[in-house]
Image (cartoon, rainbow, N blue to C red; front, side, top):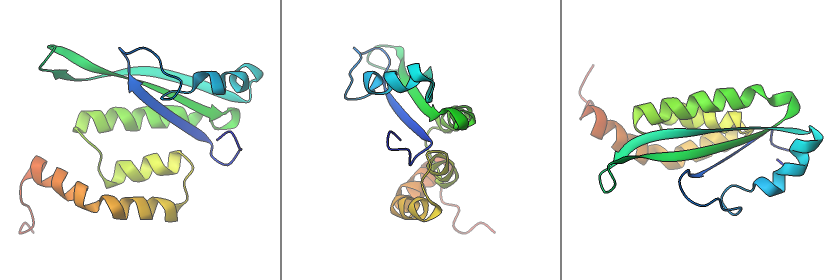
Length: 134
């Protein structure tokens, strides 16, 4: 994104941990936000309860978009929230995320092709064996 090729960058990490520039590089993006070249959006997503702490796992998401592509942040936030609600990604959500991040359809196809086994495992776990259903 810093080179101007991608319209959106997404970072995420543990919301309750100390901030780490290696995970979410806010200082690196800060000058661009201050100049108005990029816009920033962040939110915290509360996920499932961690049985060890009996508290929800909290994930902090930070998005940066070029000023003319700000709409992508709202679309990505909605996509992330749907993924969390579903309990994981699926091919449609991965395709949406890839396109929002600025990857080409070919790059998205390649990524999704590598994930096919994971999608099948997720569907089996969630819906059971539906291979014989018509």
